[in-house]
Length: 80
Image 1 (cartoon, rainbow, N blue to C red):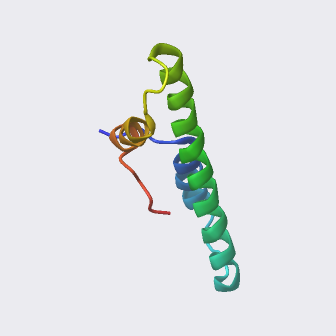
Image 2 (image 1 turned 60 degrees about the horizontal axis):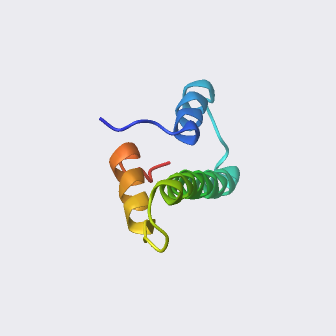
């Protein structure tokens, strides 16, 4: 079972509270949600990399491992 990020939690909560969003605002909101999710993903990956670097030999590449960690932990969720 995947964990839920803070942005995903916020989206779920707002969906339960907001009954209507005008169509002319939906594209803007959807774009901002995607930006927030990408920023959060990068923060999680960067944190993983920093922690990994402290515990691994110099020069060890961990970007792929960090992305795998994110996908394994949060399911690579990209839906809004």
